[in-house]
Image (tube, rainbow, N blue to C red):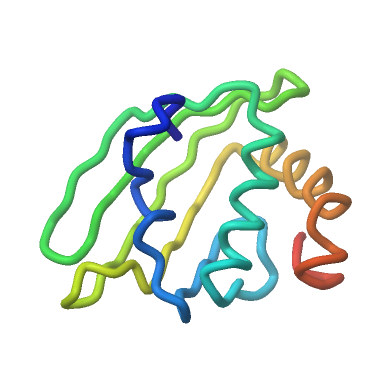
Length: 124
């Protein structure tokens, strides 16, 4: 999220090896740290900009709200729920996005980027 290479990402830096990622554009969860990083990296290439709006932690959960502009000019809002285990590792992340038009556009573009590595039929 940050262009500052010294800043910690809200969840990528702390993913457990068996972490799970769910989201609006996914037909099934993505499992495993490296697969999640691959997916998030692909999403990042489709964002022209991403601006954090809210980040708060309550107990073992953090809530991140952000606004993004896709490379095609469409705008969306996302909310990530980041769940940590007792050791502080992130074991589950769920991201919901809206409105539907930009979300479907994002999903359509992602298929070409991740289908080979993460499998066909993963995205809406």
